[in-house]
Length: 196
Image (cartoon, rainbow, N blue to C red; front, side, top):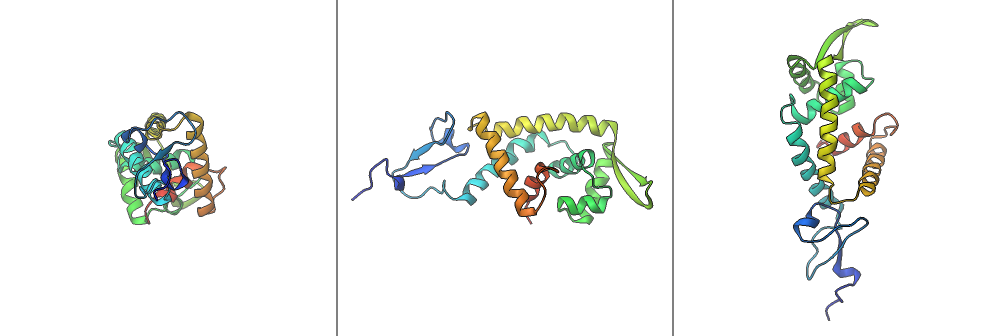
């Protein structure tokens, strides 16, 4: 005997951009899509995160296409401007980037005139990364553009739901990385989503 159309077994909660692709309207809250067969995967966290991450990468990738080293370069620039990581090595550890790779990322940002390596006045053996005026200005614009791209990536959710999702993802990521969410939840989320 077939389950009724509105039974829990036949409903799938879908919180992704696929809503529009499959013809479901979204007006805030949770959308329930009834299917006539098979599990589509909408309730599986891995599937959901994968769809969201791919869509995020598509939207944000366009914004960061001309940033040296793309998203990674954006993360480094943002950390240099906003963070408290004084050395390149500390920054690499904070962002989870191999220190050899970090050298190339920083080299490209220096070549682009976005950051400089300066002698650390507290320890002359160390070099610290400092954003240039151009780098600070560019980051301010990039942050606005990235936020708009993120909003597009989550456009199937109402504004308050987007804020709730951001908060919950940041809380989960901070807990995984044992990072104080007050320091920089964006870094925690980025680190949690980065492949290892």
